[in-house]
Length: 450
Image (tube, rainbow, N blue to C red; front, side, top):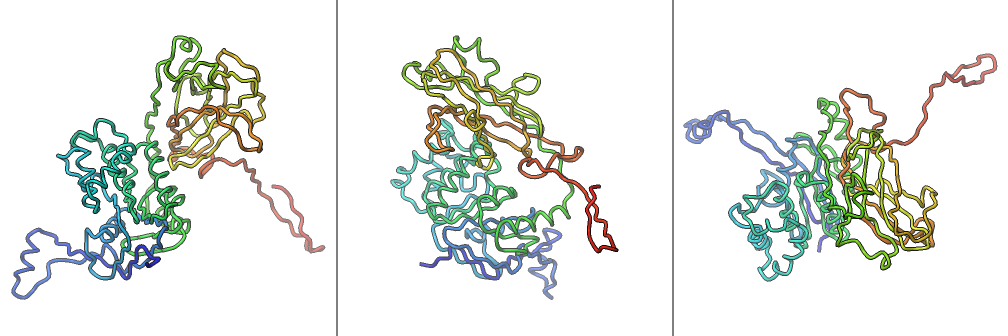
């Protein structure tokens, strides 16, 4: 069996464009074969290979030929010239709801998509629970997909493609529709598939995701393969050209960020204020049966208002409320992830050297973390955790944790305000100018700080 999953050689796709609809008929029946069209190459002499098990990105501006390339690879479209070889069972998510019958229910579309991919109904029944759990759209699975939101469409479509155990998974920008939690879930699944040897072909305008997920990438510009190789080099070329050609974009939209929370019990209602998450009465354990448990989490801004958003450099105060039934010190920590499912920071009482309580208490305890949001604009999720210190310096024993909460939205007006830093996060760096005075007599240099 070949080690090459996808091989593209001298691929060209040419369209005939007509100024008027009737010109096509005129050209067809003209006695002297007069030409009324002009040719447009969506792809021009593109060549690359993807090895089995590799994660390969395709980047480029709108109109560069990315979608045309994927449609040719998946067999939807035929090339004008060149050769395409695909070795393996392909699952593709090319556009929102592609392959779904709007009149069918979500369940019926799952089985129909399975049949298209070559699976029997019995095989799909064995995979259905996994697909249903991944999509997580509840009772809408039994409703016609024409009633779905765009987010539901992509949830179900990705769940089908990712759970049928493909050998090659092709995704074209569809994940930009889902919320931050679903995007993280999809990226985790794609990493799992890659670890299992699945070949990934990923098209996106999101350079951070391409950089994180793909070892190698193709950079397309106006149908031409500008670069094929390491993703960081492809992204660098793309950004350099994009900055030269594109006008500056506006600041990120200030989307509201709310996290669903349970109703507080009467016991906690007077203690925990502005909680963005809390346990419900059914989830609270008898304190004698557990070592420790988190009961609520709140986030407030510098004005003391419950808030899940900040500008870069702003401060947010995280309060983690908990109970403990242990004479051992129970440490509290906070972990944050970006939208690409990358942990950007994890800290707490153990890392900061803050001594926790070491006696059992039925009272509500609280640990506060003041966070300066020196991170790039975007959305972030977070998790609170209780643990014992482990035998190794950076390892602990987890006692209790919250689900992933948020998202927290960080914003900045890049058009009108000077950014405090550029990149993923702020690193404390000092800068200075100096001038060099050359002593011509002694032929020596001396530095004088400016």
